[in-house]
Image 1: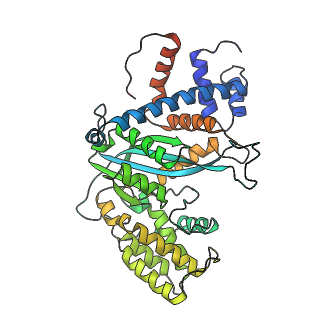
Image 2: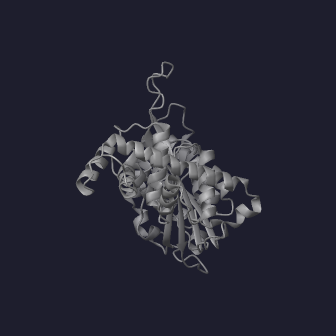
Amino acid sequence: MGTVTPKILQKMVWAGSNLGSYEMAENAMRELAGVRVSLKRIRRVVNQIGNERVAEREAAVERFQEMDLPKQQIGSTAVDPPQIAVTMMDGGRYQRRDHFGEKDRPAREKHWREDKVGCLLSMSGEKYESDPTPELPEWLATSSAVAELAKMAEKQGVSDVSEPMENQATETPDEAGCPSPKLISREVIASGAEAESFGWQLAARAWQRGFPSAERQAFVADGAHANWTIQRKHFSHATPILDLMHALSYAFSAALAVPEKDVYRRWAGWIWRGDVDRVIAALRERQLQIGKPPAEASPTDPRKRVDRALTYYEYHRLRMNYPEYRRLGLPLTSSHIESTIKQINRRVKGTEKFWSQSSSEAVLQLRADYLSDSAPLDSFWLRHQTRQTGANAYSQAT
């Protein structure tokens, strides 16, 4: 294939960024677009365009960092702020090959890395005079999703709030059985950068979407330390909300260490009603009875289960005022970010997929662009074509 037209270029980038592999992209171009183009060429094009988008993202972050604090706290005036601005973030998994072939590479060094994903959700919804759903929905009292989360935490040996849990979808019907805000639009940010850099990426994009001026703001995430470090630094005006499903999963696990019946149902009811201090008191009492876990304790050791939940709730208790969040019409779960990570993972995660730092960042950026409702690539293609031809371009909002 010779010269690539702008339309074919866009199709190559879409196929290489969204389908499961470059081989699938090659087949799709042949079968659906009637164009024969090698997977190597598709890979080169995706890396090129993705890195252009990464450069634009970094430039936007630099402009945001150069703003004075009052301007950062107002948000862009180029857009109308949403009624409810919700920020969610978490981490996915992918494999990197940066150190392949290096003589000094540790023999047991793992190739799995964490990619960070954020969702900026523009939402709308009512506020209430009081808690619209004060009673724990029955399905949460017996939820299999809660049980599965508890099992995954134990399987991975999560014993400290600084260790992120491997992400699985925790989508819940009708926002855990209570009135939920309506989703208007979703923006997605994805990167393999470390937390400090990703926090700035998230904050810069939130500023572009007018989030700092929203009437109601929330930051929803699971218990990983990195999430709440970013929240405190960049989203301190947002109401911090610990994902309800993760909160309940620790109660489910710890309840298995108590011989009484219906302990989880009782503790789940207290959490739902915002009485986390009662759960903490019950856990402390149980810990006094059975003792603290030794260093060699397994994740399923009753002492470990109790200690893990107690540590988790003591650290996050101020992010668990669920009756107030329901009164304000805010989301209780991070289901949107969990499902978004699954969409990202379909492209980048796999035991047979290995990425360099540059190629993974390019694909993560493009995948996030295609998942964003504002369609940021529409204006990008105009800018890209302008750079190729040297023609004047109309100003585009970014």
